[in-house]
Length: 231
Image (tube, rainbow, N blue to C red; front, side, top):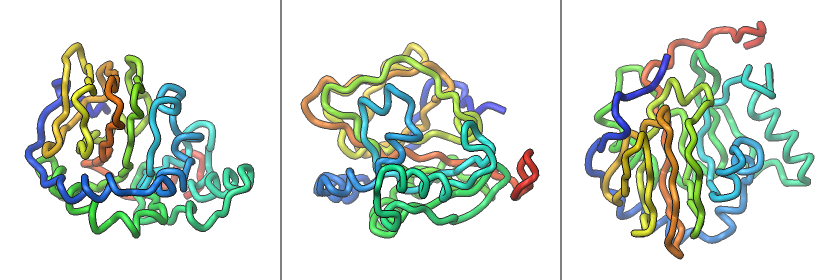
């Protein structure tokens, strides 16, 4: 299985990003600092150094390395205890389940949902399927001067889900390269981004780039027992 859309990227259409862009630009630093789980546990090294994120939804594959047979909640709680953090503000709850695992929702989603969800629904409309689910949402800032070197996303969900970018803050110094093609994302458009091709990004500006990062799973299937015999 491969979510290779057959081209480096495609524009899904225009979206009304203005209200979300204004709202995100006004977020306090505390909103970005509240939940470091994505940066410290889930992110690969280059992303960890160059970005920061607010993780809102995440499809946890329970048998993925190195957390085999464990839930996302268990791993987050262990991380909180290790870091001496309060558990309540960052502990996820299961929103839905599919054959690949559970879609977990973080507490901040309650605050962000009214602004972010309508924009996400608008962006995915051209690729929507009857049974498809939004199984990942994160606000991701590429820091000023940050760069992520050429790579191909190797996690399991990268081969199954559409990766959609919705730019909210897009300084002129931000440039993507994907499948040998250059791309400058524009606020007001949504992009189906082929992360099965080699891609990179660099922010040459003095302002952070902020995108809503969305995974849309078009064929989630039904919940089944995982290969290790636990549901």
